[in-house]
Amino acid sequence: MNSIVSLVGAAALGPPTAEDRKRLFDILLERSVRFGDFTLSSGAKSKYYIDVRQTSLHPEGSLLIAKFLFPLLKEKGVEGVGGLTLGADPIAGAVALWSQLHGAPMSGFIVRKEAKSHGAARQVEGPFHPGMKVAVVDDVITKGGSALLAFEAVRAAGADVKLVACVVDRGEGGSEEFGSRGVPFHSVFHIREFLEGRA
Image (cartoon, rainbow, N blue to C red; front, side, top):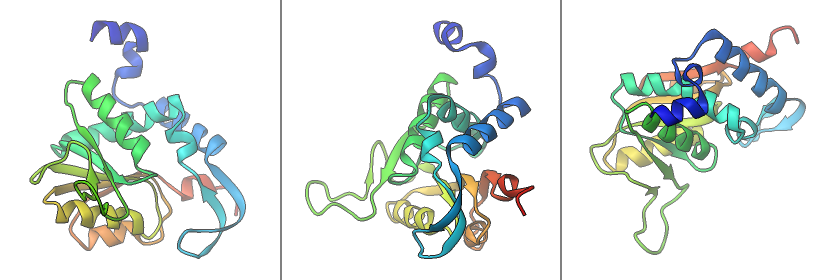
């Protein structure tokens, strides 16, 4: 651990700060938030698009996302973190590494859109087992479709879902969808934080 601290820095490994949040906001605004005319995966039209993968696959952005999600997951007693491929994959990997550095290891897992038709025919891949306490994560949640697919898949595989979390909530019903299922929901940012001043 001492070698990690000397390499990364004690402050970087500490709890998230207001400065960390501002820095992650700036990275997202620079790399991930785009304004224009877009068609979303749901088919809906939008004046903005958020490609969080441009941040979650960025070294500093990845570290900061993990830094903000880890305390929430630890508080819930989470043992595994993952979601629907591809958006959740870099987030799960970052949190898994961050958790190991902090002595509270959480395994990462990947949820396929559908089970493989060959091999073990699994839909949930990685060090995952029935009864595991998990968090379902996603990069962006709009109505909750991708996260809901992952949620249903891990529940069907026997997991105990303690939390659904994302980096950015577009505020279009996703949080309410999970609330109606009695599952806690958390987002690091809400879209309105990026839209302020643009109306």
